[in-house]
Length: 187
Image (cartoon, helix red, strand yellow):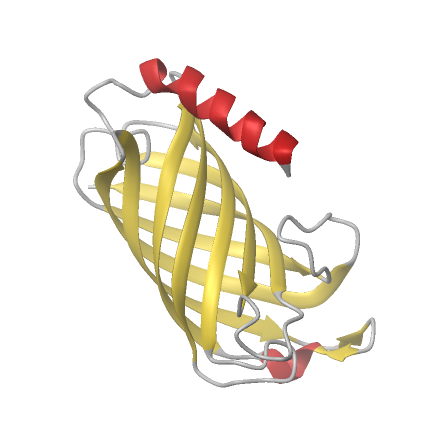
C-alpha cells in the first residue's frame, strides 16, 4: 500500500505542470462529452483485478460528462447508465442471474497527460436495479483506471479497468471487475 501511495504522489506531483494548460484532457476545449463503453468481465475480488479469469459477463455503458477540476487537477464529472449482461455459468457463478441496469455518478481525475494521450483514475457511487447474491446490496461504489487517446479534436478512445463493489456495506461482496474500451465524442 505504501508503494501505491508513493507512486500516486509522484505521478500527481510531476503531472501537475503538465496538466496546467487551459484545456481539459478529457473534453478538450468543449464543455460536453458523450461516451459509449463496452467491457469484458473478470472474476476477481481485487480492486485492480488481474486480467486472468475472464467470464461470460459484459457491461454496456453510456456516459454524459462535463469538465471540472479536482484540487486544481483537470477532471470530468459524469452521469452514467450501464447494463450488465451475463450469459452462462463459469467459476461457480451463474452470470446470467446478474443482468441488471445501473445508474451512478462518477468523477475522473487526470493524473498525467501528453499531446494526444492521458492517464486518469476515477471513483463513483450509484445503484443497481436489484440486489443479487454476488454483491448483496443495491448500493455500488466504482473505481476506474483509464488510458485515453485523442483521435481528433472531438473524438477519442479510452482503455479502462473498472471495479464495482458494495464496499463491505453488506456481508456478501464479491465485486464486478471489467476491462474494456470506449469511444468519446466532445461537443
